[in-house]
Structure formats: structure tokens, C-alpha cells
Amino acid sequence: MDYYKLADQLIDLRAKAPRTKIDRSISQMGQGEVFVLNYLSANGNEAYPKDISKAVKLTTARIAAILKSLEAQELITKTKDSLDHRQAIVKLTEKGITLVGERRAALLQSTAKILEALGEEDAKAYVRIQEKLINLENIWK
Image 1 (cartoon, rainbow, N blue to C red):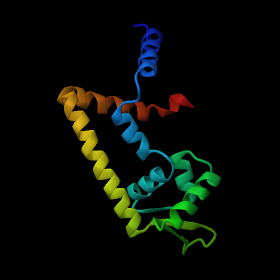
Image 2 (spheres, rainbow, N blue to C red):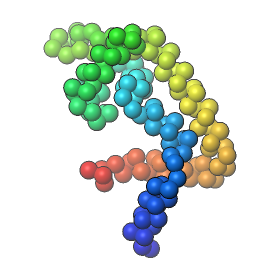
Image 3 (cartoon, rainbow, N blue to C red):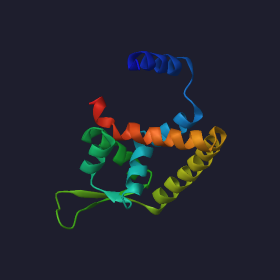
Image 4 (cartoon, rainbow, N blue to C red):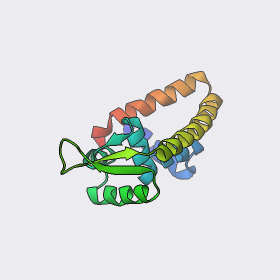
């Protein structure tokens, strides 16, 4: 199999077509403030800023700006770590938890519709391939 030819075909296909609704919807959950809120939600509603920075692959300065904005919106709080006072712990507020839940529910609904339209076999294949691509992330480094 000529993987370069297949890659060329895939790149051309993606360039010709607008991003699909599923790509746009999921992408929105993986950007900036929303991504940080989702990260916190997936990690017991709290984390250290340095861990957020590593996980979302943004500089600590960018994370600090995002956290400042989220704190101003009352979606998170920052408190000193009781074990290490040099560090802060970021926690989702009830307002933040509610917002993440609402956005996730809306995303689940639209994504389920798209997967249903693909049909069972293709939907399972799509999710399997997406998972495989995520697990192959080290290739992109």
C-alpha cells in the first residue's frame, strides 16, 4: 500500500471539505477556557496549574491568563495547597460544574446524532480510529 498516496488523498479531501459538524463541536470543547474547564471536570474538578499546562499543551503564562478569566467569571477558584503553600490548587465552582455539564450534554446529543447517521459499524470504526490517532500522538512530536 502506498501510504503517501493515501495521505495525499486524505489531505486533499480535508482541504476541499469544510470541517464537519462533529469536528467543530468536539474542537470547541478542546480550546482555551472550555478545554481547561473540561480538563478540571475530568480530573475530579481540581488540578494544579502546572498539570493543566502540561495536559493541554499551553504555556504556563497562557494558562495563567485563562485561569484569571475563569476566576473572574466565577467558574473556578484558586486556593493555596495545604501541603505546599507555594502551589495553588484550581477548583471548579458549582457554576463551573454546571456549565461543563450543560456543554457536555449538548455535545453528547449532537455527536450521538452524527454517529447514528453513520450507522453502527462506521460509528464504531470512527471512534476506534480516533482513539488510535490520539494514542499515536508521539508520532507528531
